Amino acid sequence: MKEAVPVAVVGIGGLFPKAPTLAAYWDNIKGKVCAAQDVPAGRWLLGREDAFQAEPRPSRWASRSSRASTPCSTSRSTPGARPGGTRSPRT
Image (cartoon, rainbow, N blue to C red; front, top):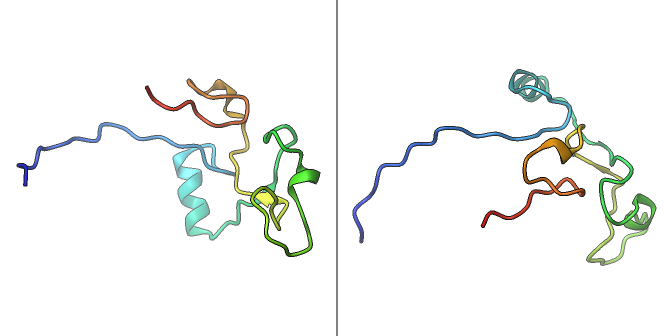
């Protein structure tokens, strides 16, 4: 086994629903806030009406819920963000 090498984490970040700040995020956790909400129009390539199916059946693409815990703001202002709100893979 190789010798362990010390590592320092110098920063971390994230986008969380209904929490524009770290303090708000922590308050939501302490207050047991449900952050699930309707998915904003245009967030996903597949339209909400096409992604939601109320009747139970197996599917790779559809969901049994029309709600999700997505960040309220669009991620377009985030460096490396793509239109769907996902980040580009690191190269």
